[in-house]
Length: 65
Image (tube, rainbow, N blue to C red; front, side, top):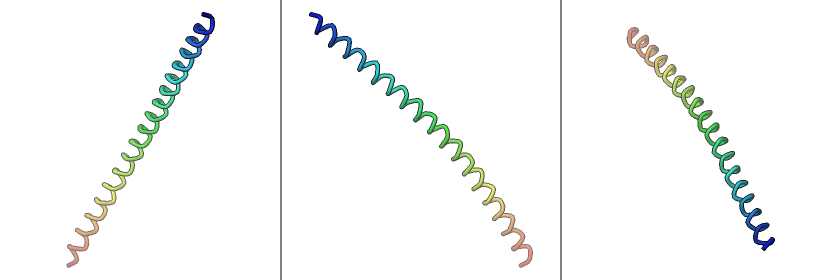
């Protein structure tokens, strides 16, 4: 009888540990996703700025032709 209780208690502890591990993984992945989203925003802004610079240069070159 005692062994059943001990086994049940160990099983419950393992479930709680797995749940805690999953929660930790979720937090880490969410943080990583947020960081990557911010990095992507910076990349997109840089791309847009470069495209605007290229367009300006092309207009300047067209004015000389």
